Length: 161
Image (cartoon, rainbow, N blue to C red; front, top):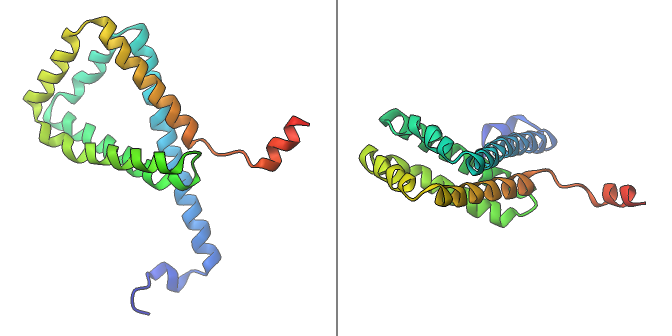
C-alpha cells in the first residue's frame, strides 16, 4: 500500500478516471474563460488603446501585483492541466509552463518597475498599443481554439454528409 494515494485505495478505477476527466474539464473551462477575457481585452485595446492603461492601473499596487501573479499562476496551471484534451497539447502545455513561470516572477518585478514598464509602454503611442492589443487578441483566440473541446471524427463525418 505504500505510495498509493487515498483515492486509489478507496475509489474503484473507473471512478478515479471519471474524477480526473472532470478535473481536466474544469481546468479547460478556466483556461477557456481566461483566453476569452484576453481576446476581449485585445479587441477593446485595438479600438480604444487607452482602455488598456485603465485596466492595468489596479495591478500597479502591491496587492494588485500579487493579484496579477495569481492570475498568471491559475492560467498557467489551468493550461498545463487542460493540455491533454486540447487541440495542441504540447503547445498548450509549454504555454502553461511559461505563464506559470511568469506568475512566479511577477512579484519580483516590484511596483516601481511595473510603473516604469506601463509608463514606457504608454509613451510609445497608440499604434504601438494597438499592435500589442492585436497580439493579445490573436493569443486569446488561439488559446480559446486550442482549449475548446475537439469534435470527434464521427461527428464531423455525420455533419458533412
